[in-house]
Image (spheres, rainbow, N blue to C red):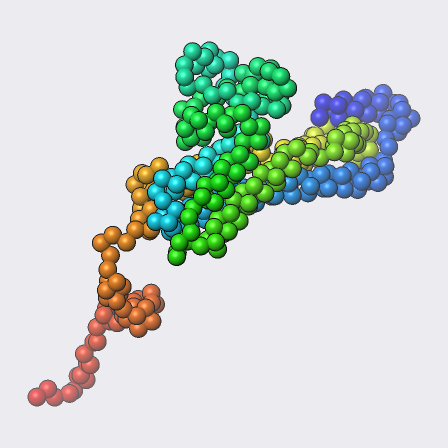
Amino acid sequence: TAWSTLVSLTYKMCQWNGMQSLAQKMCLGPTPHSLIASSIGLLLVFRTNSAYQRFTEGRKTWEQILNTCRDITRMTSVYEHNVGLKRKQRIQRLLAAFPYVLQHHIQPRCLDHSQCKELESSSHVLVLNEPRSISISHTKKRGGSRECWVDKRALPWCLLPDPVLSKLGNSHNRPLWVTDRLSLEITEIKYDDNFTSRERLELLKHTNTLSKCIGHCERIHQTAVPLNYARHALRSLTMWSFTLPFGVVDKLGLLTGPVVGIVAWLMYGVYEIGHRIEDPFQGSLRLTDLCNAIYRDVMFGDRNQAGMRRQSAFRKDFEKESDWDRVGDAFGVCRTEKEILEGMLEQETVEEPELLPDDAVQI
């Protein structure tokens, strides 16, 4: 805006001082920018569409994680007698920890230096070996990896016992380790008349879906839009907006600054949107809210009132088969909302008596 205003003021000063030839040389006309605008528009549209597809794919991946965790929880609750209460609890805790571990895998969150000093001498510190550099965190180099400190009292580390945490911390791909342990727990369920190989394969199929979701998230996070393409689009947009005042100053005059400023705001806004959403795991998606939703659904709200209400769907306490017979036929006994309203109107309608004519004789 400042550059466009300066160009418009210079143009007007040349006209006021009688330097018409110099003022005319400052005007490029709208033709060059009209020809370049289509190419820049294609660059911005392609970049924005590519970034939005990555955002949509990331959202669908986490939606699939949410649905898969719910399906596994439902099956283990239905076959609780066959799975066993202890094994069911272990599967639930692994499922509840999986989304948080996956979030840490693609978006590491380690303790900062002040938090590490407070917990350095306590037993609540868990050291994770990271195969890559982590910024804004407490890290120590050891061999070919780095250490990341987390608090064992926070989610998801509080869901797992210390022996499991030590193995999980030494793994470089922790969400994959969780799916491997889930597969082990499922394969150890013994067969009987109700739980056969069909149910086991179905649970293993859901576990494989979680493993595929890890690969999808890694592909989106580790494969960015080519840097050369992004640089070329930004340089072209900068050159176009920098020379735009010379193309419209003869028509707009002193309004060149505000008009060019609005156009540049719109164009750079589209470019920035594509830059922000090309990696949906860096703030575009609310991963913490999704992880908390999976935790509540898998752990039944940590056994709170709402969670117990959902868990009661798998219990038939104080229920009898005859209770369902008393409900009646939904197509015969129960009435629709329209029929209920019509019945209320009929009750409110009162028949008025017929009025006798004035000359009628009442007997």
